[in-house]
Image (tube, rainbow, N blue to C red; front, side, top):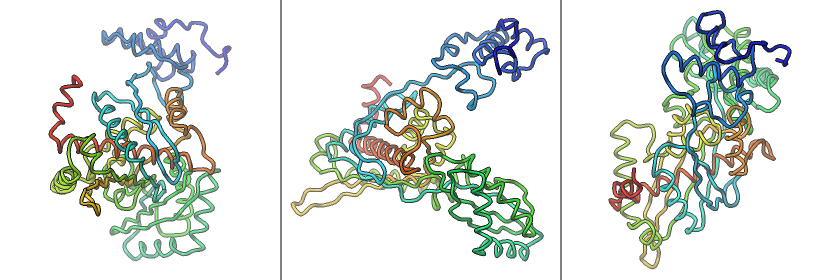
Length: 418
């Protein structure tokens, strides 16, 4: 849209009145005025109809045009407080060096707790971290006449030449993504094909969806299967799912550390044995009794705060909660006991390009981590971000379990005025 395309009548109050009377639709405002004026007009409308005062909502610090790919019917911005934890030394497969981690949250005491854990990890020499598996998935569901046609479809998919044909079709839609494989599942007259992609530094959900759609056209043409839905929920996106906990989605990443026993007692005011027991009875046995898919104390706290700060898809915190925390008391030859601590996040879906990572504040947060944009080699920045978030989650687990083991949790919240 150019300046000549804009309405000469661009007064926000008058535009709001036109929407109220039905001569202009709410979502059409950007067709007539610039995005900031459109957002202001919507605020006028809402203030008149609801009595709300939207002055703070409208006091945002970036041009509304920059958020156009990320929001519809924009009225302003939700400003979540952002803090920082660290630095912490990380020896990762992609991350190497000292890292700060920005976290955006409304939960008081969270950053203080995570920072305490990171301080202990730093005093212990830092954390190791590795991405052990990577692949963004999309699983369309097809209808067949019965198990005979289902078997015929699966046999066609598993043929090496046919798989290569599907790979060429899928990869023709993207300059970066690579099809890693297709896993078929049959349930009666339904066939699910779980496509997995290497999406490099992008989180890659849109990339995987578009590529899979192209491949599905060939599946329909060459097999008896008829596409019912491009997503059959076996992906599985933005919902608790055992398949993500077992097979992974996005990045599967583990971080660990060994903390000397004397450091545990001096800084965490408890013992390695007490923390290990609290983890077993709470995170393992308690989670099993609850039927939880996540065997951890609060990994989603750090994942969610990091996602908001760095522009990830916040709904995918669900998959990030697919985390197993382990704590083990390890006796040394001198009779003292150290603490081994780890977190394994099975399905952490992150990117450093695309989506919300391009928004101004989120881009700045990625600059703080030192991982904005594409990596060299491609995929290395997203791998490193996953490792940094995993170490943050490890610190949060360590600090909370120590507070529980030492019975300091409630007093810590009271001291911080929460």
